[in-house]
Length: 305
Image 1: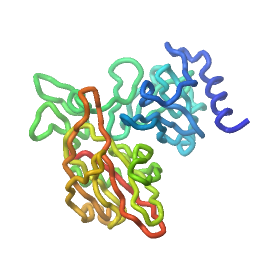
Image 2: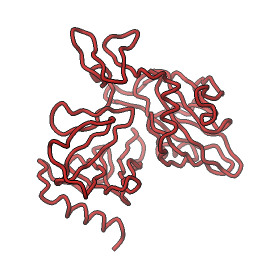
Image 3: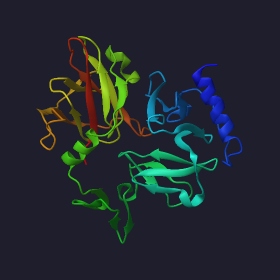
């Protein structure tokens, strides 16, 4: 019996009678109706990712094995989390802490790190990660008499009292993110394969580049704004590209002055959200230059607030 089957059986046994309102679903396929659904593979979280008009595919999420935890799936919506099977959990243990959602699964403590593009929400029900887009006070506070009361670590935006922004400046915050544990992704070639290589905003990746050929990854644009790519190696970045393969003007090509020893290069570009009214994000593409012998480059892409 292979490893994946064993993990699936383990998950089913541990979650039997877990008290969830909805049954765990394990036989779904990654298609447009399951965009964002998650499953467990090799003790890691995988999520289904759909790009309009492109083939479906999965991307890696949290590495539960690296955290010393066990990947489990719960609920009809296919949500996966890392569970500490040795630590009992009650409702009093459910909380948001360090922007990580802690909650109970079958009486054991589970966790879901929300990253920087989501925030942990625990006002009602089970704590969970929510998208920051269009959230009250940017997801980091609450409104009172038309002005945000921001949570610790956040202050009022200088031009909008209904938004909370990090009190740490953007370059310094980027250095902190860049020093975190990196996900892995492989750039693809040719351009038409870009949907198969995905990096999320505000998460650092080690991207593997092929030998001596231009290659590509895509990332989500959630609104028209300035986006920045940070790289560990100079001379690797080629261009920001639209889905029609046209290039977008980018400026930069210098280290991040706050941590030039780790971020050797970065570029800025104004990118337009040009999706349909029903879209919440659209893909843009990074083209990497050809590198003799290939390379692995650390990459972070952020929307500048």
